[in-house]
Length: 343
Image (cartoon, rainbow, N blue to C red):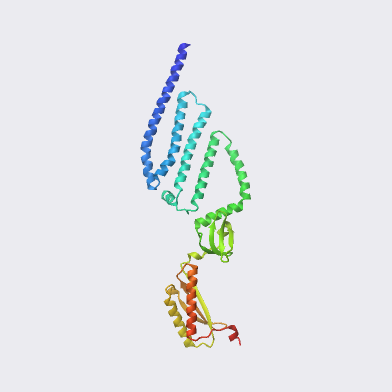
């Protein structure tokens, strides 16, 4: 009996010594692995400009993984058979460590569009980046939760089926909201306009004041604030007036039918000189033409003004109009009116 007891004691002591030795070897292996991998990770991370951030993101999951391996090693060496709950716990910790590393890497990689482009070669709008990060991280959390539930032998298939039915009900109830969210992604992704632009659709024209997930707010010319659902705006034809490289000049005056041809020739020459004197008028598009209208001779001045700002364009067009009126008065030409030519 005493010999049997002493044998069991020796076996227990041997297992403890083996566990201590194994932990020591694990510690040495971990130090060696860190010494080998850390410089390589740092070199790769420097290429995308986030060496310290990536290393910091991986250290916590790495320590958790080493801790889990130590628990597993101790459990194997101190016991002939490892209990099922301990096995599930060890596997769960490994799963958590791996997904924690992915989660933290997503946080680092998607913190800026520049870093994301360096790593993936894909350009993404800075306004969409936070939403994509949240969606991707939420997907990782859900996937990790499902794997952990399966590890602990829960009925994941039934849970997914129940969530699918519930998700369908929610989707049907919130289809307008979902459509507006996709509209927001379309607007921000395609970037037909940004805050501050003056846009024109078939329903509204004004200055964009804000773009939210559900709607876009536009300040109308009469100072009214108009809120348009993103789903409707994304499906509309949008003219961005702020992105015009040049604006159309159109001035028309009507002269008396009795105006002589030599007076018309002089007027056309003077008006062309006027357009040439304005450096902001595109020379290739500047034109002056005369046509016979219902009430008199219609003089049309057309072209493009090389201005994008609407207020500056209006001031330049007004200056050309006033100069045109001065020329007409200098030449002592008469304007036509419906009453005058209707007698």
